[in-house]
Amino acid sequence: MAIEIERKFLIANDSWRKHAVSSEVLTDGLIAVSDGRKVRVRSYANRATLTVKTKRLGPVRAEFEYEIPIADAEELLSLCAETVLVKIRHRVPYKGFVWAIDEYEGLLNGVLLAEVELEDVLLEPQLPDWVGAEVTDDPRYRKINMVAAARDAARIGVERPKPS
Image (tube, rainbow, N blue to C red; front, side, top):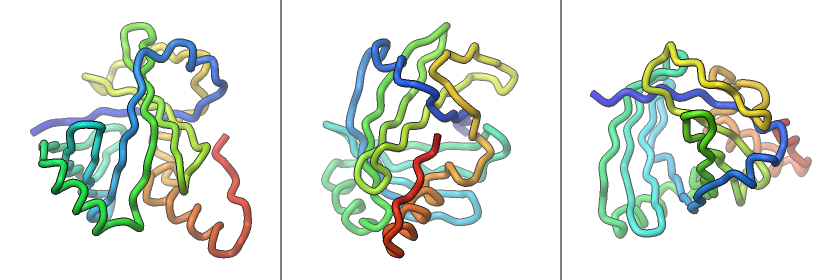
């Protein structure tokens, strides 16, 4: 079983940008969500994956990811259009870890989140100065909840606040 140990943070400032070593556009679609579990399809520039994630216990959960044909991913994305998100994932190395900075477009335009994956739950990476508050356990920063909040704000015609 594959285990994902991931911590998520807000971004405090843009100084990370000058240290990014790569960036790629990802398109994610949630196929199913139930009680913290999810099935996601993701397309990259030249490949696609299907991922099953179990309920999170703190920063830890089981994750199973499989390569799928790009045509299959495109069809699945079209079937779950209401949960499709596009983001630019920037990779930023810092003190022995590679951070993923997700910069959302479209519905979540302007939202920036930093994630770091760990090999052991006891690891405490040194936090860069561009990292803000930790939101790993904050349900407001789960993608499904961010999408729902953005849709609700759009539906009633108010500008949604951006996470700070």
